[in-house]
Amino acid sequence: MKGFQSIVPDQNKLDSYFIFSRTNELKQYGEVTGAGSTFVELSGKQMSKILIMVPELSEQQKIGSFFKQLDDTIVLHQRKLDLLKEQKKGFLQKMFVFLS
View (cartoon, rainbow, N blue to C red):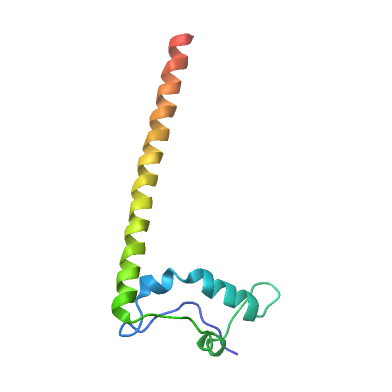
């Protein structure tokens, strides 16, 4: 039995970012359907049997684009948060230097 390592959607039928947004469903399917003692594995044949409701490609692209924008916004804010944490750390170090 052969397994697979990745999902490569047909670009004429599926938007990859839309499919990426459905990974929780794919994971749950794998946990229920897969087999293996060390780690769960699915065959390509098992994976081909999964039923996922999928809108038309144009709608998938809109949904995928929306989720990509959200992810990009989260990354941007995470970077800002990291910079603010570093700034706070620097201020705290300076504050304790003056108190010594």
